[in-house]
Length: 579
Image 1 (cartoon, rainbow, N blue to C red):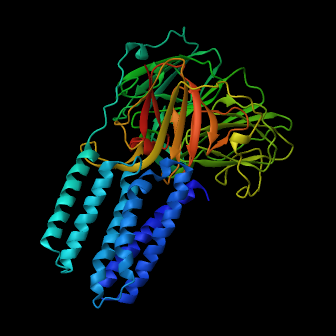
Image 2: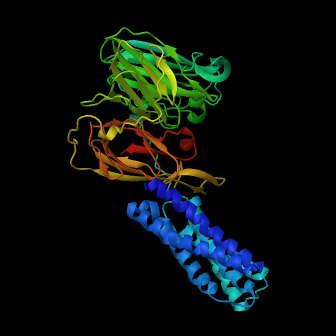
């Protein structure tokens, strides 16, 4: 069982335990003794089983079990000690068992809420709020059932509840230290890169585009979705003028995966102001990285990218030989892009398919009809790629794979999630059962370039209630905080930096660090054994622990966020900054 499966199983078991105890208490209050004992027995069993899942999660990593060990376990133990002995008695009035069973239900429910609403890291504030809730709910139930507690007991319960509530609320609502955002002019100063050799103009505006024969309202660059494909040869100097015609919320250009100087990165409020209607901004940088990349707005990116403000950037080391095709995959108003295309290719012609996932979720790609190699991932060439056949690849949000093959005399087709998007002729092949390539084991290995690390950071991805804003919100969190309250990671130029990225939530988080490619060292404790894997986008699935590293060689203030852009908008964004 994977750690992700354990996390899901633990949540289900916790719900069963809480429901069983509460149901048993309600049945006991209704004088339905057999039903009460049955439900309580189920709850007791679930509580015991949960002890096993918590132990397994703790062995997988303290990140996965901290609040369960420190808060849920003591509350569950108290529930068993209070309610368990009452189940063995045969009182005259079954209602006398109701309050202990309800107490157990409240205790397990509070522990469950700590996991769901607070998550990682475990805190004294969350624990005290849980205790306050349990004590208050138990006291109210006691009164409602006419159990008539003594005045001393009532006063003690009131004091405990109020003290826990006040102290817990104070601790939970105390804002984290505000991140130090640098305003160093050096970060914002564009580097001298020479006179442009390739000039482009992109005008952002509302538009109506045709998708699968339907007119769709979109936001578009130059009136098309995707925007124009920008191409260059290594050594070119690109100059891209961005104009905003009528996108009221503003636009920018972020060069996804391209390690541009910080001033050209296109992040509003960090490297530039958003370009408002009637304004323009000029980006200029040298094309010194060959490969497949893409560009998109980073202003209100969750909305802007989804509505069509994106395009492909391809930098080639030399003029094109053979067939070179880009396939940016996107979902616009629920409709898939691109439209299927068929292009006959002469047998023996080298073909390169540049696959770009511009959505916020993972897509499955399968090439049928010819052996192929994965030549590059995220713009970086792989070392010693081997021939693959009947094998699918999963590309995370923002990621790119380059597939190369020699065209055979028979047709070849590329399928995305079972839909043919590119072919050289008719192909009828079922690809759904094909195994998926693991890029960490593909290609020829070589030693890591570093034997030491100057900075080490851990990012624990979760969900939780963010109380630090004007209004509470249920946020995607990093280390228990949400943007803008996540402290930045501070590095120095030349540092070798190691990130451990842990996902203790139940959804996938495609991770993306701006301005740098990271070298994958391990995933879930298993070292990467294939070609050195330099990524800028990778899926951290539920229960995953990725360890990656990079050299801090691009000074500035860089966004570091989940590329499911709805998650980033809901709090899962932080920054890497150079001291």
